[in-house]
Length: 416
Image (cartoon, rainbow, N blue to C red):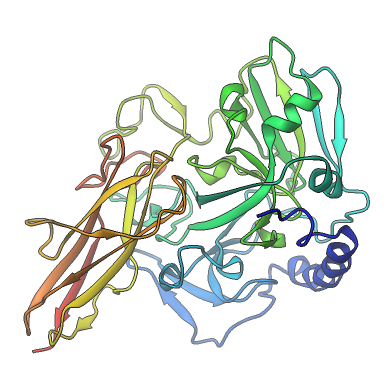
């Protein structure tokens, strides 16, 4: 489907955004005070220490779980993942590193620039990208590097996310490769670095910059995106442009992208080194409490799966077979199998995979299980991708709580 015309006449998008950003100015400039507070009793308590979260509706968002407001860190309530394979824009998680975020963007003057080790510096407006380049769509999971960090034992530093710092969307944009090739890449180019419009509040805080190796930046599926799920990017998810790096953690998916710089050397800015690093070994892990000797940049996501339609602690009926549904994903090899256990992993049976929306997308799965009345069960799912990588039965540990792909357990009972 070509989204370059009917989604975005530039005039229509500008008028619509002017209306939206007039609301966002008030909301974002007062992030210290919740812009739209739900009822005071509207809270969710995640199952770990200090896991109580207020539900708050920010501009363009339904009530989400708030971890911090400056910068905004908003988590998707987990039942949302049972609504559809694609996470609704108004429920998509939000994670900014810097608190100084623009409250308005003038599309008449906004440009994204390509510079550095290129033959010619180039600058494009949003309309330029939509009219001058082939539109490309990719379904891909965007997952925060710290997703599920709150479950780390022993506890680690960083935002204590539950499982909702992720989302799956159909992203529309232009290939990053097409922009780089139009600028002309110098023979000594090694990395491509990305910057957005967000800025630090204090001068001592480093600007948020992330880099990709050139060979990965040139991959077909790496996009400069201007739409998600058929609509303009929400302001808090990076309007007007964000980098989309399917299979890689969301720290690389730079929001409000306005600067692309080609480098002829490795990038050692703060957010590449020392931030977002994992132990340099096969598992990316160390013994709890230890510090790694050597580290490498965090990049791709391991295989994961979740049960989405059964809550932990639920009481189920045993009168008829119970339908259990879920999602699975990995770094882009694609999901090959999902297995389900009702007894905490002693016995496994194959679940049925649903529609394949692409190798980087959530893959739905389901299974019907017969339960006995008055019993306790431990539901688990285990996914395996097409190269044989599987979830781990037990969580591995590293000092930043990255790479979690343990089999998660849902405790349920049946009516007696």
